[in-house]
Image (cartoon, rainbow, N blue to C red; front, side, top):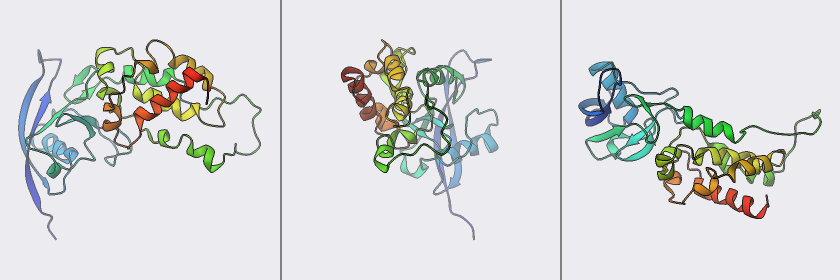
Length: 237
């Protein structure tokens, strides 16, 4: 049984620093399944029109977070957005606030530096247990939402503070700090809160909610940041 296809128009921001003085827009018409995603359309360009198009992608199922990009002005995962749901021409460009390495690929080093700064791992100074460290359902629920982060950078690169100040630790880093600050098994909460109380920490957030809108996992990013701020101010976990 054949699968119905449809044509879609895309305009993609291209930039190869080895030969281009500045970014430019390239127009393409692609033919993919009617239910095709933006990632499928980009694959069509790369495989059938212009193999030099550069983009990151891996699982193609919204889990790895590698294909975050701006689609019609909003940060999204290309593997989760259907072409038929978008106004045409579909405008695709790299996420903002990070150096463009080529086309839709950005340098993630600054983003991951912020992530690493909050010590995103379990810190437990008690003796090594002989069984797993148990939690009640209520204790697990305390930080459940922020465990969903896939480090796609969609939230951080949607933040206007980050656009103008790449020293700002960013929403994703705060989300991942939140995940451990409120973990009942963790002993490093106060260390992380000290880090996030710095000039480039949680209080740089201006609650524009761009981060929450951009999150492909539906994490309440702004709410998590506000909770961290309250813990810094009132020393309550």
